[in-house]
Every structure is written in C-alpha cells, then in structure tokens.
Length: 349
Image (cartoon, rainbow, N blue to C red; front, side, top):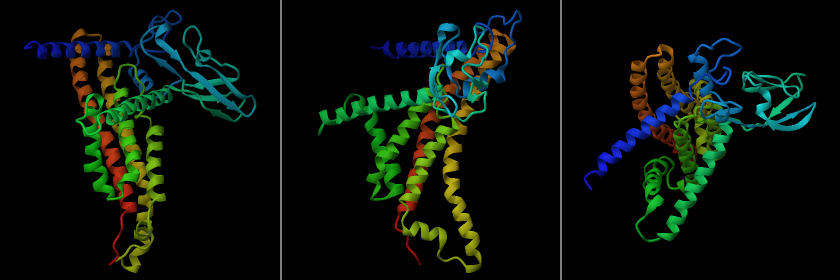
C-alpha cells in the first residue's frame, strides 16, 4: 500500500517523457523528401518558423509521426462552378517528394487554401485537420455525457459514482456559481447551451495539447462561430430594457446621447470580437511558446539544450492544462454575463 504514490509518480514521469518524445518526433520538417531525408541531393535545413506555423495552422493532411505511414491524407470535398462537385484524397496534391502539385485543375496554396487554376468559383467543403478534430471533439462529448446521463438515471437518489461523480461537481459549480448569478432566475433555458459551450472548449483545449493534435480552439474560425452563437442569443433574446439602454440611455444629457448611443452600438459588436480573440490568442500563444522551446533542440543540436527545453516544456504544458480550464471558464462566464445583461429586467429612473 505504501508503494502506490511512488508508482503513480513513476508512471506520471514515464508518461510525460513519452509525450515529449512523440512531440519531438512530430516536429520534424514536413517539406523535406521522406520527412527529413535529403531532397534532390541537398539536406533541408531545419526552419523553426515554418515548422511552428505548420503545426499551428490548419491543413488538409495530418502528420502523426515521421514517415509515410505517419501521415493521414484527409478527403477533399470541393464544388466548382465549372466542374461541379468532386471528392478525392488530398494525397493527390503531393508527389513522391512531398511537394505540392496540381490535380484536376486544383491547387493547394501553401497546403491551406484550395484554388481553381482556371479561376472558377470554388466552394471548399473539405475535411481538414481542424474539422476532423471538431467532429472527434463532438463525438467525445456525446459519448461522455450520455454516460453521465445514464449514471444520473441509475443512481437516482444516491451518491454519484464513476464518470458521473467526475462531472457532476463541475456542472453544479457552473450552474450555481457562474450561470445562475449572471443570468438570473430564468437561467434554465440557457443552461444546456452554456454547459455545452464550456465542455466543448475544455475538451478541445485538452485535445490540442496531445502530441500531433490539431490546434482547433486556436483557430479563429472556430472561436468566431462560438462567439457568434452567443452574439445571436444575446441580441435575439434581448428584451425591451436592453435595447432601451442602447438606443435611449436613461439619465444621459441630450447633448451626449448620440455619442453614448454610438458607443453602445459599437459595444454590441465588440463583445463577440473580444470572445473570439481572447480564446484564439491564449491557445495559439501557448502552442507557439512550447513549439519554440522544442525547436531550440534542433537549432542548437545539443543534448543539454534539449534536456533543459524538455523540462521547461513539461512545466509549460502543465500550465497549459490549467489555461485550458481557465479559457473555457472565461468564455462561458462572459457568454452568461452578456446573455444576462440582455435578458435582465432593467429599472428606469
């Protein structure tokens, strides 16, 4: 019994070491022939900025580890005004040396944007790395919370057990300390949305910390859509008092009313912008810092530098887990606050 803590600590250290090993493996340059071999007879020099940008941005392929068998080529789904709907593998855009090539009149601009070489209108519906991660994240949410729901039914009137016991304190805390105080007595109708928002962001943040994972919540398109949901709910559900405070602010001198109304109208749109940018910047910055520190190993080619940067990255990675919770909490709290401000009963004096 006394050896359990020591065993747990050893397992944690081993797991952390393996995670760092896989992360280093996943940081090899992706544009070189055979992922690090010589390209056309010349060795490709390690480019840290290119590698970091590649791992932070979205892509039509997904590198898990070095080598041909460590790459997942995602499906391209594209509609062109000239060719119609077409579906094929993104592998067709890469030759044997992993250089980008043209296929069926389409090209990938730096591996990201799909363009028609005949300048026809293109609607890109491809399953990219971030899109696939988003679907995986949603699937995990469904599986986890279906299990939580079964636990509630099974343990009705009893103490929570298993996975229910893990998530119930978090759900109760969010309901009683975040959502209800900010929205008020009519919080129940917004509870499913806000809880889904919190856990979707939290799971996405944690998935993004795994070796080789996609930077889903560090994608501004993802954070923008979530902020737009809050924006729509806030303004569609906004009551008469909410709009009255915006377009007819009480207690304001007539001479200042046009300026205050302008500020209030701008504030309607700055709220979702702040939600979008805050999450996007916090998550992306953490990834860039960790990748930059790991890149020092390849820049200096030193075991000592590699060991030192590994320890620092391990520490920062633990901080990023905390940041994952904080950012999910902050996004949910501000969403609840904005909804509460638009639906609260305002007093006019």
